[in-house]
Image (tube, rainbow, N blue to C red; front, side, top):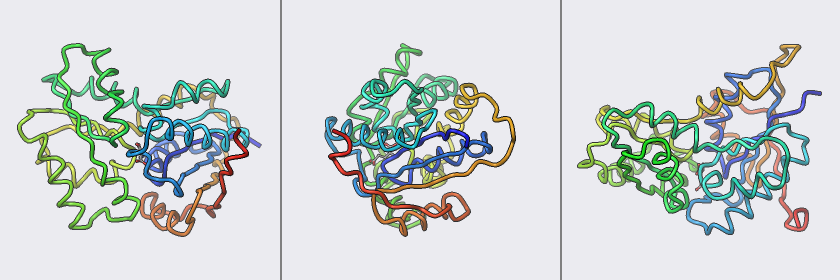
Length: 266
Ligand code: DGL
């Protein structure tokens, strides 16, 4: 049995990362965990996000994973050091790959970042972009309603368009040429965001960059058999399956619901 790659997110958003990894590394076994009982993470406090992230990681570590992909910007922004402390396996966050793409993309050094309140408040993107491109001007804006709208499957809903127009009006006079989709749920709204930004701004989705990074870390599996994937959620597997099918284009293999009993992790 090949040791699996472990991925977690607060809900369905991390499936955008799962999809890119599956495409780049089809022979890997993948275990995905979506914390659907406690989504969204974005508005929660740093301590809570760290606690939830550690619980999710411990659940996956029990499944003998060989690498942990934190497919949630909020957890990557706030909990990466704590996650690295509980394991010896590599822990991959989603911020650095997105930052690298953004810095490569910008021509005028004016970069926009959208994310959850937790991610924007942490200034993780600002710090990481400035570390590579000190002259960059960064304009960040939290879009807290995007995650529940995506979790609800309201991807092409008129209400989502209205809310997106309101949020993105912040960037109208900022003259950015690059906008980082700093939340793994947001690529699902990419065509809407692109339309509202009048196709003038490069949108950065780090999923492919993460998959490529992972490829450099993992030796090629010998037998070339397609991997077997497993999906776990902390609540409401039927709803997860429905949105997952929309995102992946295929029904995910049976989704299991698990309870992250607090006592397991203390
Ligand atoms: N996909 C998570 C992220 O990238 C969403 C966080 C949330 O649950 O608010 O930040």
